[in-house]
Length: 259
Image (cartoon, rainbow, N blue to C red):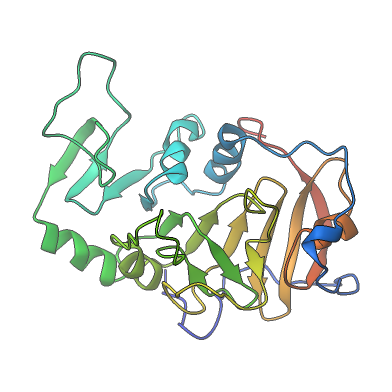
């Protein structure tokens, strides 16, 4: 697999063939009520897991992305990497069987699969920066219409900056998937025309998974591939800070295992 350019989306990314008319960005406060039910974090993790191919080397970011490992399709082998020096990371151990010296980058107890290995932190970052990971799933405060990622600082004193290995993963992984809610707790859009928070990396995001939609970053703009049942494109646009285009084969977003 070849690594996407820092200035051009991945060549493997779906194109927006026969798109509907672009929807202009709207003021979030003007969003109309809908009966659509957003995906919960477990359903969202299950949906992302369906996009991870067999045999992939994957890094899951701290927080929500770690849930993806619990929802892999049966029979699918995925090798999980953790930037603190693990390859072949397994599921969380049963209560009472935690090893305090076996943790992931978020300091949560984990296990190792047969054949897993440990290595120095420096070697781990060489894997990340050298393009050896097939994909990473990261959280985000904001994603721009061109795939810029902001996920390490907001300027809020109550939320200290925490970059970790996000910058290295964002520019080193062959594909970058984002897992986030569509809006903040005060109903501000996380998908915006231009990020107002400090950037983690420019033009790196390939696909955004939110609790309302699956959206690709393409040369044709932000293309909505899937949307939750009961929500229209216009209603989704009201909750988004950048113009959206509907894919010709727009489908319903579900979080069912193996759907």
